[in-house]
Image 1 (tube, helix red, strand yellow):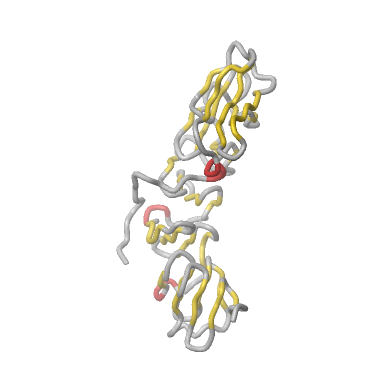
Image 2: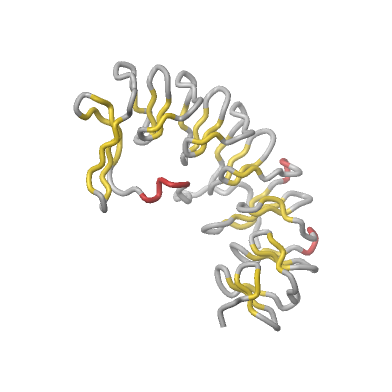
Length: 231
């Protein structure tokens, strides 16, 4: 399997809850008040008034974010604690101000805004750690961290002493024999893993993935981290 450092793509996986929106959206004045307006195919035209916004200083940042002299907004919701004077939108739903980093309007706890960088595929980094979405991976060696596998729902990576999976973090595995078998499964000389969770009783020599969440060895089938209950 070829290894790549932080891979870039023209079509990264969209992040978080913005996925369900369809059609055009953005800020505009409705009946004298700044509002977030969107068209949803199921619900039609939706108007969300930005309550308590300072109308004279209100300014859209992009189609989802705005600010006034006191607050920063995501749609019509105040992003608590965000500083409108230093707030800047980055990309893929990441933003920062002078003291904090935000993902989807929520603070990315522990992230350092002065060194924070958005990578791709839901990964980001600062001087201290790598983050998968909002989860800090607690990477052992930042300099050797390399993405190995980019899947639709999970991403695998490693540094010179540990393996990581985006939804779980660091994996307690045998580093020298660890193999990635797809988005969810991995195996080493001792155990098989589903999303970083050990699967008990596996014959590791014959273990293989058979689907996104299914696998088998020569004795039994597995679903997730358990023996398959579907016969």
